[in-house]
Length: 377
Ligand code: SF4
Image 1: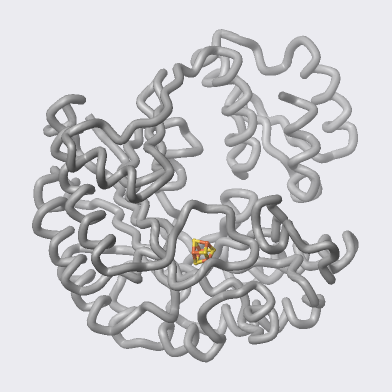
Image 2 (image 1 turned 45 degrees about the horizontal axis):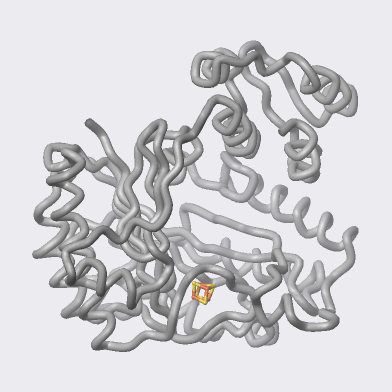
């Protein structure tokens, strides 16, 4: 049985102004307890859920800020957790890094552990924008991390960027993209439009100096053009890669493949069941120390919900939604009922292409993907 593994590291140097992911400030004693709890969670899961013999094809350390863990904590993870897993010989193994907690020494250790991919949470190469976002690093720190000799030795290196930021202009975004593509190690780019979530400092602010809608569309188009020009193929609405550098771990989510999440707030999916761990690192640690399960929520995904999720995930990919797979998995026709009229309208506007059996949004369709998907589900 093949399996993707996600490990949520819930610590950050400080909270960014736009972030609604679960994370707390780093504390060494709590991080030590968290690492022990992760090992215990895998021990229980591998025995109870029969995962001991599963082959792990992708490992993704996300967060939070995985690179904030110390060398000693990474050594414990390597010896007490990952060594007890059956990793595929060609496992794709990613660690998310922030430039301020990345060190050459950690990179050397990750290489010796078998890590294959690094993704750097850079977001912008403009120091004013980084300050507005509340990021704990500067553009210079990001450039120094990307120029580190150890980074070159990973099979793949990616960047995360954002656009539609307070005070951002088309020119400042152009300059960020230019700097990003000037770094020769970059093989993958994720670029997300800023979303304002209610329970964040940005969400609580009365007024934010955000660029207008036309400026944001201009930034999105600039992003597509620049990626294309630099040989980065778009494979999902926000993800671009050079040939051979797509992230297989993300593809597992988009394909509804089997994945297990370890750590607080981590989600797992083994069809037709989904479950999530408690979103509190203290409770996560104490439950595991007491020998109880950290699972806080469980659901079974029925046909209608699976249909909605497949539409949501597959229409974000450039490959698109396969109507045969959709029918097989959900017991429903894709081009039927109310969806038929919506699809006809979207097709007339040239926002979706249909090449039997695949339905895929065009570049114009991707710009209004949220609205199209909302109408379809
Ligand atoms: S570093 Fe990432 S996870 Fe941590 S607060 Fe900032 S955006 Fe959120």
